[in-house]
Length: 91
Image 1: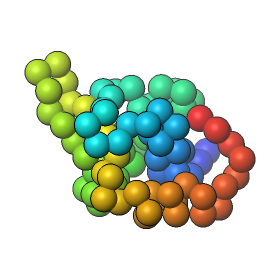
Image 2: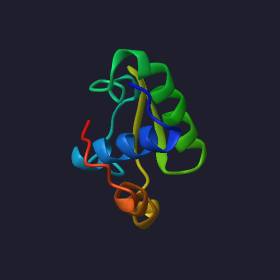
Image 3: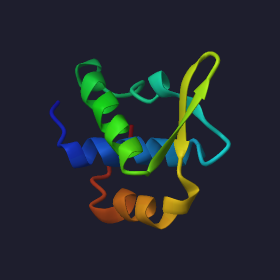
Image 4: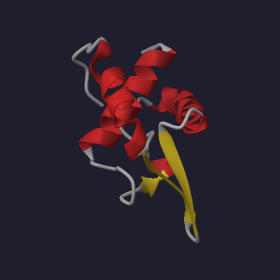
């Protein structure tokens, strides 16, 4: 299965919204690729890093590893991406 960069980003954001990982509620960086096909894990991690650089995702270093959450200030933009061209596929 080959997904475009946009589709991977859309699925990452959709998964994080579905789990309500906003602001103070966060999850381990390595949890995000779970649920994607194994061959896409590297692409998912790269897109997650790009989302963090663009401000959609906030990184939170902890004593037990890097955690991530959605940036509450970017909520309208995140929702726009999620609902832009909904392919109906869920992660």
